[in-house]
Length: 232
Image 1 (cartoon, rainbow, N blue to C red):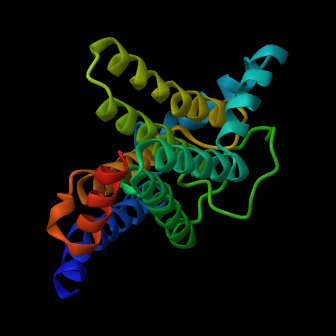
Image 2 (cartoon, rainbow, N blue to C red):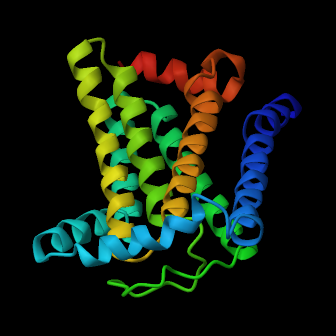
């Protein structure tokens, strides 16, 4: 048990804590130090240009991507994917990894918004603003954690090069979400860029802690691994 606790501390808690510190530091730099420095000085013009270019069709596409990354959608897709992986693979590893990555980014996002108070872009907002800071983008970081996590799992499950390449197309979803959130006037460019860091690091940390972990190293995981092999 002591060894397991040490492993969790080393592989999960310390890296996620460091990520939180980095996200808060970036937020403070953006809101307090670099406000009048390039490239932050051109962010408002980017948001205004996106506002001027709004059309009915593009607005509809942006709404679809924004909805895909809404809290209910993220929770639903995560649960469905976790159940499917558990039933089809006969083990918990992939399901735990995906849930852990999504939950970790949400925790880092929430705690960061408590420390950083950044107003939304000064353009017309196409969505109702939640009572959180504009930094970082929760929609973007959640979609990165979920769809990058799904891509990582699927790539590990296939040996075919073509299918591996197709799996990475899932990353188009968070890209679309990031562009959509800026287009809809909900976030500055630096908000969504920082969110890629949040979601991406959470996926990397959980992949090292769960997917890359040898099942035989702990009795709990070893028992689950033996059960999966016997059921297969």
